[in-house]
Image (cartoon, rainbow, N blue to C red; front, top):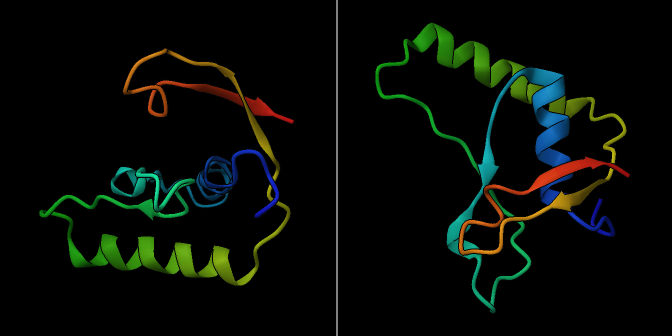
Length: 93
């Protein structure tokens, strides 16, 4: 997916459809030396029971072992401000 217009967004959409796990683009890397960003982040509430955390981890590992086609996404609308990456709308190419 490295040649996709939005590889991180495409991967995140695939991950959610395959596992139900929501994640996001890691915004710290959005400087000139790291652009385009190629990292994602996961946020797990501190009170998550070990059993739920284990199920999430197993789901993620299983999906990554058998990664299927990842569809390219394109940006269709953007807010023109500092939060444009967070509030952009995408659709399948």
